Image: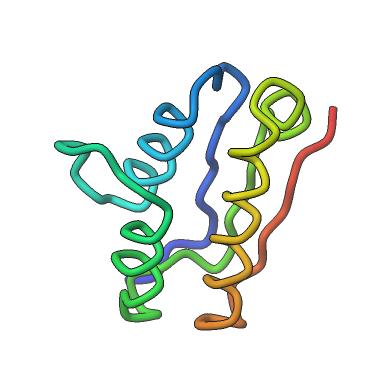
Length: 96
């Protein structure tokens, strides 16, 4: 059954690995290896829509993007790929 919302908290992200593992864990991917965005894109974007949430909400993005801006850009690219494959998923960023 499709969940309504998936919350991903990046408030304490200080490394690229933390960001990728947090995203993988949130989508139910076992965190037993080091992930690249290409691997995560393939694993998550190819999931059936029925197992993906209707909305993905990010907290802590502004702080993360200041701490590790290159990783924030890569995460943005991943989200663009996700929305191309699954345009019905809404992505929100909490700015507080």
